Length: 71
Image (tube, rainbow, N blue to C red; front, side, top):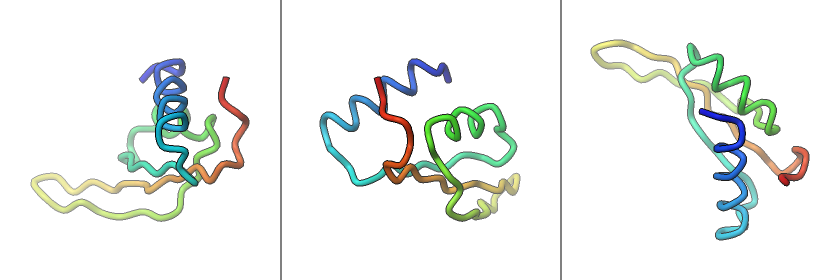
């Protein structure tokens, strides 16, 4: 996911819904995405497993409004 695309998504979400925070889930192995989310002030709240054909660990990340303001 591109930096500006994610930034646009957050901006639209803020404008339309004015949430107290954003929450997302991302597979732990997806370090590129985790790095991007951290640049936007997201922090890991907890981890959880998805058990299936392939077991995958996920990070539950939130941005509680303490990140730099979006452009």
